[in-house]
Image (cartoon, rainbow, N blue to C red; front, side, top):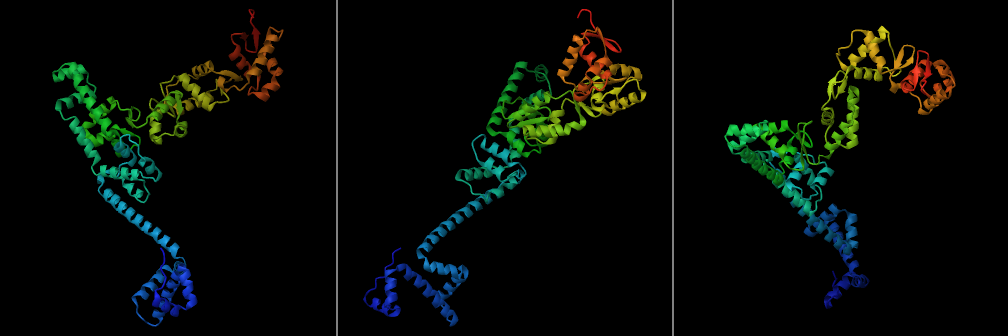
Length: 506
């Protein structure tokens, strides 16, 4: 803005007389100072009018402005007219932006109010996937970033600054939510299965009837039954590919990342068995049947494959107290999208609880004995001791419940002796309980072979290696060494009660 302060004849003389020649020249040479002087002079007049009780519209406006903006800001404005113009331009832009944003927010609020109330409790992300049908969108990342979980949470996004594409997607999405989605889905299924003969045929297939049985019931050939079923399945597959109904189902069910058969029964009643059958037969890549959860995994089911592979590596028997920590470990290991309860259901499917352990298959008494020894007798069990035998029986029942054990303790002791090794007088231990290095065992073996004696006493052998055995292993007596050598080298040496003998053929 340029100031035109060049006076005209008489006006010049008047201004010069009022301001004085020096002030007049300053204003003439510096328009900015002239503007500042004008501001200050105006405020001074307004203050004078107020003190004198003079009511002036202009003065009142100036005084109100001074009160609202503050005297310091008014002084700054009087001294910085060019910056003030920039500020006013900026504020105008802000006001325009604010008005535009307010208008957009009002529109979004209007769209939100028009959402069907039945959709409020549905999860937002699966519905976005169903709405976009694989097309790119930033809404999913945006929802997850600002914790938009349910449709009813969508109001939380209105305060966010959205790009044009995101805002367009959001408007379209909320407009799509105007209809009761589950009612629409139910009506679509009714139209798909509207023929009574087709409905009866598919229901029979869902219940396990063969093509031959259905052909006799309907009076048509097996080939015709197959054709009708294939035609209907093709229609259903096209519907799934076009409308992504499985994601809509996923949004409304309590379970996350899968839809249970129970949920289908709740929403679709008599059509649920047919829907379940067609979903199982569907060729949709984002849909997978999960027998363990009795439902359909929606979306990427790679985690399910990983879980099944890991499950196949688990032992035949799982300790009851060990299972829960194992489930937590698995969930962290694979970052599973399902909860603790569902993960446990998948892992333990195929296992049955017997006492305090989960078993994949029915196990023998020997396997039960082995498990009890491993858990309760890491240092060995004393055989031929009635008190110890009764204690062992109680451990078996504690771990496996009511088990039909031999009534005779001797029969029990003989069976335990079959898969244990001697570790002390009348005491035996599982081979897995022996802690000795292979180097030391080989050293003892070489010493036996190098000895000129044909028969070597176990006590003599133990004394020879006593220090090394006591320091580096859990073999603490000659009986234990005898049991280990007999278990390891029974094919190479002959064993008596107190000694080993080299075979003649060696």
